[in-house]
Image (cartoon, rainbow, N blue to C red):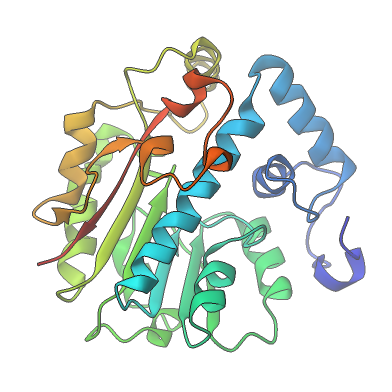
Length: 270
């Protein structure tokens, strides 16, 4: 585990599990505590291979970011970033091109507080606490001024949009973001599919919804494709997230059902 003194804000109650730190644990990271690891182990008892799903999603992130860097993208906006550890956007992008700039956005104050300490000293990264459902609070924020909106930007919304209920019109929200981007920008999305056959996820989503928490909405391929609007999907199009340009066995789970949990796509603004 990482040195607590260097990355734990005084304002954070480390006796309470955090979704962001739990995700870090699932990815094999060091920015988590015993309470998070216990919550993660309990989750895996209910949802076997939850760790594999997290890693398949993170592997897609790496491939998508490297693809965008190869296309000349040097600035990124990651909405729903969690704690930026374990090969997250800035690490992948700046390894390929050190001049890359990244703005991380998350609504979870615990994730943001940790992120600010972890990223202290990296002058090419900013962290913002804001909600995806309020685009103006993100696009017009002081943190977003790190990015030049006259130059192409890579935007990532990974396993985020299924938490936006249909009544919030997520397609309208995405249109707002797309219109703010200049030509040549890219948008990467992963989203839980409604046609997977991994029953533990369906049960877990139903339990979350029944408990009155954030509503998890599994959507069809056509519904997810609509998030890209008139952006042009790059090859291989909108596919299951393990199938988007895999570079090796490490990009996939050993359980084929996990590989079909979510759709993934990257699209370019003409």
